[in-house]
Image (cartoon, rainbow, N blue to C red; front, side, top):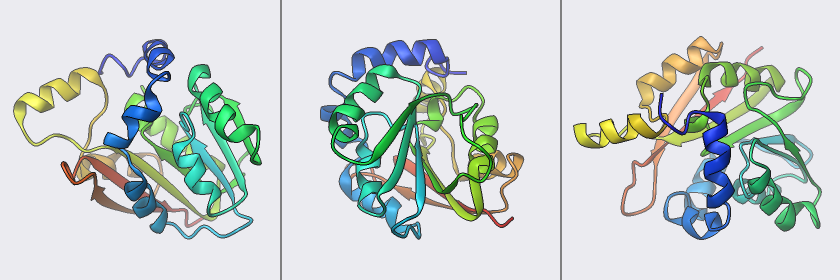
Length: 206
């Protein structure tokens, strides 16, 4: 387990990163990538959408372009403070301080659940994926974006020491263990590293 797959360390990390997050994030996760991920979903106006690990609200803002019923959850109060300042004051976004492994919502609460740049910090990713499936309505969709596993041995060692990196085969294992059946993956990234992220979309069939 990497050093940032510890919730307390991750909260401390984001206490400081939140100050510069919106300036750093576009180098890793930009508007073009967000648009590509959104195009993999069938969100309609009126759909109830949850952004798990919403951070400062970058993906949340993109989701607002699809439907007005958007909810954001994060375990970092500092990231949520930034998100609320941008979106909670003026837009109809409800934000929640919470844990991906124990979502504070009833079963079948959302038409779509989105999570980008969060799974890599989850100590128990399969448990969090189960929770996401639990709160997604039958016929709904789940999208998860995480860091693609590096190709070289040195970078693999570095990645493993920091947080969760995974490839399509590992994604298949995690989603299957969490009870998903219909899952597809797509690699995406900025021009300098077009395979930096792995985006998975699962459709809830029951």
